[in-house]
Length: 326
Image 1 (tube, rainbow, N blue to C red):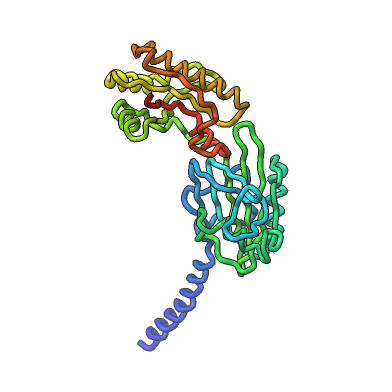
Image 2 (image 1 turned 45 degrees about the vertical axis):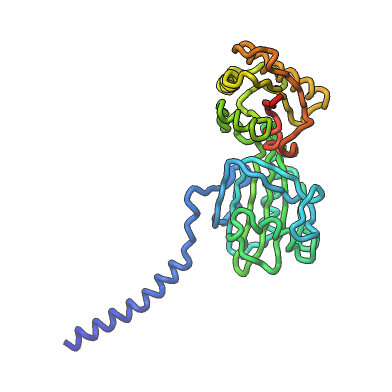
C-alpha cells in the first residue's frame, strides 16, 4: 500500500512539471493568421513576419501621406494625395531581433525592383514633428486596423510609393515601428480604380417624378456611352424606357436633357461632347414616341460637378445625364 501511494505521489509530481511546460509551449506558439488573409501580391512580406490583422474592401477613398505632417490632423495638397479604389490593409508582426530600418529598406528595395517610385520617406523629425507622432496619428487613428497597432512612444519609419499602370496606379504606404520585443509593420495598398457605377439601379417613372418634384432635376447613371463617343449604348434601354414612361404619364411636362462630363480633356471639347450626348438621348426619346418639342438638349460639360474630380470615383459621378424640369 505504501509503495502504491509513493508511485501516485511521483506521478502527480511529474504531471506538475509537465503542465507548466505545456502552457509555456502554448504561449510561445504563433497566433494563427486571420482567416482569409494573405500578402498583397505586389508587396509581399518581410521574411519571418506573420499577419496579425487584415482587411480588404472593394472600394474606399483615402489620403496617402506624401509629405511631413506638421500640424495635428491636417492633411492637404501639400502633404497627401487622394486615392480611391480597392484598399488592402495588413498589420504584420515579427520578432524584434531585426530593426525597423532593415525591414523598411527590404520593402523599398523589393518594390523598386517591381517598378515602384518612392514618393516620400521619413523618420521622427523628418515626419513633421519631434518624434513623428502627427504623421503616425494621421496614418493610423480612425483608419483600418487602428487597434492592431500598439501605441509607441518612439514612433516608426514611413515610406509611400507608387506604381504607375495603364489600368490604374497602385499606391503603397508602409509604416514600421518597434514595440518592446516585436516589430509591427502596417502595409496599406490602394489600387486606383473607378467605383462600379453599373451597380446603381435604374430609376423608374415614379422615382423620376419624386426627384423632379423635390429638386427639379435628377441625375441618371443608367445611360451609357463609350469613351469619347456620343452614341447611346444598347444597355441604356431600361433607363430610356423609364424616362419615356414618365413623360407619357405626365403629358404637360417638358424637360431639359443635360449632358455632363468630368474634367479630363479640354473645356470646349467636353462641352461639345456633352451636347452631342444630350442630343443623342433626345433623339432616342423621340424615336420612342416623345414629341421632340418636349425635350431640349443641353451640354454642360465639366461646369457642374457633383463630386471632386481628383479621384476616379468623383469623375465617375460627374459623368452623367440629368433630366431637368423646364
